[in-house]
Amino acid sequence: MTSLKSQLGSIFSQAFINLGYDGEAGVVTLSDRPDLAHFQCNGALSIAKLAKKPPRIIATQIVDHAEKIAEETFGTSALTLTIAGPGFINIIVNPELLGKLINTQSADPRLGCQKTKNPHLVVVDYGGPNVAKPMHVGHLRSPIIGDAIVRLHRFLGNTVIGDNHLGDWGTQMGMLIAALKEKTPDAPYFSENFQGEYPSSPPVSLSDLEEMYPRASKRYQEDDAFKGLVLRATNELQQGRVGYRKLWEHFVQLTVDDLKSDFNYLGVTFDLWLGESFYENLMPSMVAELKKGGFTQESDGALVIPLDASENEPMPPLMLVKSGGGFLYHTSDLATILYRVRTLKAQEILYVVDSRQSLHFSQVFSGAKKTRIAEGVPLKHLAFGTMNGPDGKPFKTRSGGVIKLKELFSLITTEARKRIDALGENRFPEPLIKENIIKQVGVATLKYADLKHRRTADYIFDIEKFSNFEGNTGPYLQYASVRMKSLLKKAADIGATPGEIIAPENDVQINLILELLKLADIVQTAFEENEPHHLCDYGFKLAQNFNSFYTECHMLKETNRERQRSWLALTQLCYRHMELILSLLGIDIPEFM
Ligand code: ARG
Image (cartoon, rainbow, N blue to C red):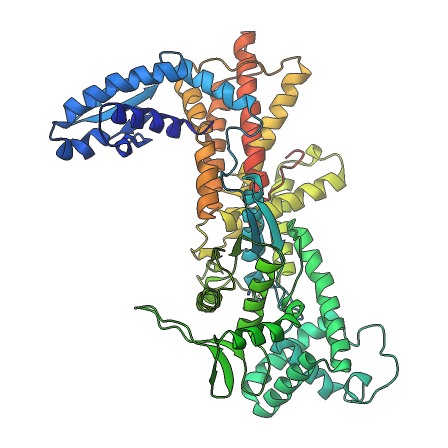
């Protein structure tokens, strides 16, 4: 089964084809005048010129045919078709058909969402924070969007490997080593011929690292002597100097534990944690292979792959080896592709990374294409914009600093607590349950705010607005879901259970069912475009439609049993939709609210 709109599209295409016209003209869209019709088809107008017939004449023929095909397809008087203006066909779906279709959808565990016809193995590269730097707000979007994309691909039947491509091998490691060496030059890590056992616990704490890193990074920019030390330390680390390797292990361990707790808080998981360092041994052999294949060139002492510029975009070469030795971000990303294609057998690779890395990925992708490392494997950069504060600049702390993820978590939790407290104390008999719900609402605030915008757009994170239980927010969708769930429970308590859905009896019910019949299209579009925001739009509209239904149709008081059971079934179906949408977005439905 597919959405109602596409089913109607097939019927109209068939009608055009039967009459000898182009089937493409059968496209059906939502009506521009929802007060007059549910859908419309403008095909008669678009082909009139070519067919050399007045569009109203064509429309009349199409209406005749489409009515018959619809009746054959659905086995009931299905559609009311009228012709408007110069030849638009207005389509009203009869209530009996709506009732029939919605029962069919309800009987399907996948709610009418078909799996992809071309299932394949997709590697999704998301998360990817850098070791030794605390995760800040700039690292938030990749795991949130990436996780939703992973869930969506899995639901549609792809096999997905989610990989957290940690930055654990670059110059920042050299900065920390050089900075620590200045502070404690006598530590065993720095002595070239140290023979003993290195200490098993790290010489610094995570907060030491967090303090050291920004200072070292600033000096690296300003102080050439220090920069020299950093580059040397990086190089020596990459060459395998034992003391430095030991230090590096400590740095990685300290940060990975902390990263895990942040990702855990967000409910984001990965199948693999293969950071840049994982490709250490693959890089030299890859470079040798590319050299042999004649793909590389020397340039000012460096080894590069020249890339073809496009008309409007110059394309700097891909850098494989720095002058003086050492691999770069380009090198590790190319090796990563090689590994994903050859070893993981990836058939598509998606990168959920900030749009500021667009040039980097254009270069890496052209390099992979040129060297035929990713033959037949689509590589896509799913870029995203910046999460800004109310001033339109990247979200900051009150004092203007970069905000760490943990600080942001604490902000959203405080806000969620305020809202939950306002609901009244006696709703939450158990403090632990209440704490968990506060966390779920806080995380929903953050994730939904991030997911409801087009990926590439920058957006302003307004914590007041996005934590509100009203409006297009995560908590609003949670609240609506909880309302559905508790309504069903209350009904069960008085012995009322969901039954067959009967044909809708008023506009509120019709609108709700029309909305529910859109699901398959929405999920498909979100999947094809890798754009979770379509799911948010849908969830929001559904919650609104349900709330109107809930206000209009007093389910618990309804005395006609058949009607009551039908309404409850509709409620249950709405809940299943919300459950699906929110689980694809990675948002929990609280036990109660
Ligand atoms: N560590 C990188 C950064 O923070 C992001 C990694 C993205 N993935 C990749 N394969 N390059 O900018």
